[in-house]
Length: 123
Length: 322
Image (cartoon, rainbow over all chains, first blue to last red; front, side):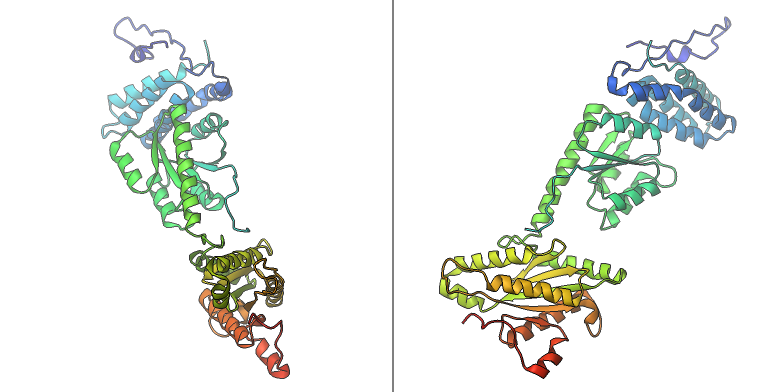
């Protein structure tokens, strides 16, 4: 299992402004024959899913962001990406909070999209 | 026996979840289980499919847009058609109170998303097992122990159902009420164990007719046979065939013994006055009573035979058991 430093990805950190190169996220089920096809499908749909999230975020539709995050939270782990589920869970929570438009939701959103963008089938 | 005992068919599982990802995942993960998987992507679709397919188990998501899983469960439980379906909640919510609420509403289990595959399979299997035992128990409670026919409770329930179906689709529904003639004498003369075997044999004959006929033990030595989508003439023919078959039966205990039955026949639309399952029983029972009056071992049709009888003064069939 590769340990990933989630918070450092996709965030501009401090004065050196160096973005940590995105480490690919592998499915825990990469070697599970019965899962191969649907994991590939999941990965192939990532760009479209990211667009859905960005559209909802861009339209300040937090309810939609929350719903999308909730769905991904429930499913991603099953496809072998528990890190995506965790980030989605944080986003769901932040998007549902009363002060959702403030920094914490933005941080959660950026973190989540960065994690989702790292999803690959296998190394 | 023509009782509709559960043939070992493949159990049906309905997944109600608004995420396509979950449907795909479950189809793959449960592909080697002996179940038929159906999907619904919304609460409304799920309720419709539940009623149509009558699945054994439903995996139900809690958070859905138009209607949440709790509401779906309440609706399933308030519909007699769907209330027996085992519902497992499947949710990404880890809130304890949600789980408590779900179980209190009548869900049999709760699975958290993301789920472990082996656990998911085990929980589905467990729900199916429980469902199977429940159905068996339910059916056992509707079967008469001696005759193996449906019992009176089932008879009344089923007749009501067939009468409302027949009324809705404008199709005839007929009922035979059949009673073994002079049964007490049989018991007195040959003993109760033999009396029991007579009931068993008559039950076998009554249930060996057309597969759509529903033979029930109404009580004692009286039987009710529901004939869905069967007109009066056809019903009378069925009754006559049963009467002849029973009369022709040879009894090893005494080659000279002839056991006979009297049968009353009625068809729903021929009833004067309110047409209900209760009035159908009353009229068929009345016809049975007339058959007894006419000397037993005959078929009497409600409302029709009186006129004919007045003309000819005839009785049909052989002399009853003395």
